[in-house]
Amino acid sequence: MEKVVLNVWMRRALVALAALAACFVAFVVFVAVWEANVGRPESAARAGCNNQLHIIAGIVLTWAHDHGGTLPPVPDEAVTQQEAERGLLRCPGRKATYHGESLGPEVPYVYVGGGMLTLAIMNPARTPIVFDAAPLHPGPWEGLWYVIRPQHTRNVLMANGEVVNFEEADFRRLVGEALARENYGEDAARRLRELLSGK
Image (cartoon, rainbow, N blue to C red; front, side):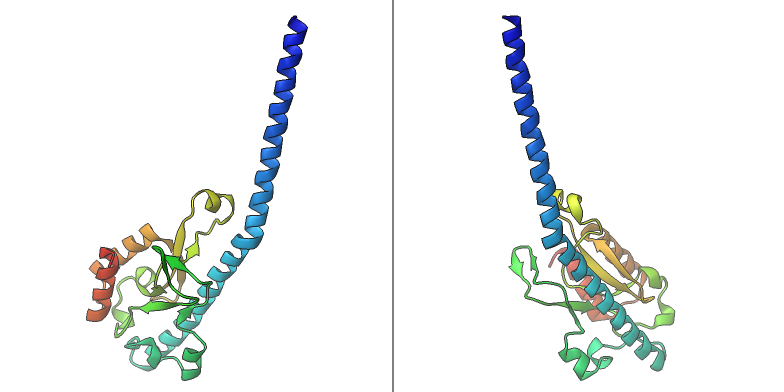
């Protein structure tokens, strides 16, 4: 009788182990497929946006150098017609949705550096001048963690020409600090305040 009971428990244990092994294999396959079909394209989209913002940095900072250290009132004044037509002022990432609303295949950047005097910026490394209009990109660690906890981020161009990727809470904290410290133009300050208030 004891042998029969033992054999039953052994069979149950083997079945449970086999089921766990099957679940583990299925999970590994799922992560691999997700990484190949979602993670890599997302990472490439974020990198493309990063590169685009570096190009914009070169353009607006060069314009400022040629105009007494003042950033262009609007980025259109610094870019050529050809650059504008090929979408330089829009994030080149994939079609995005934010708060359930489709943002289209390309999302415009928000420019808030208009008219700022570069030499008067107190902390250029912490002063955003261009950023994604919405949190579009996955965080730096896409893989398994992004599957479990989706967290979208924004690429942000700072006044020193550096591009930094921020989670939304950190980005809003950055904007609040910059608003309190720097002398943004009236329209830019209004847009930043609206962003913080969720409008």
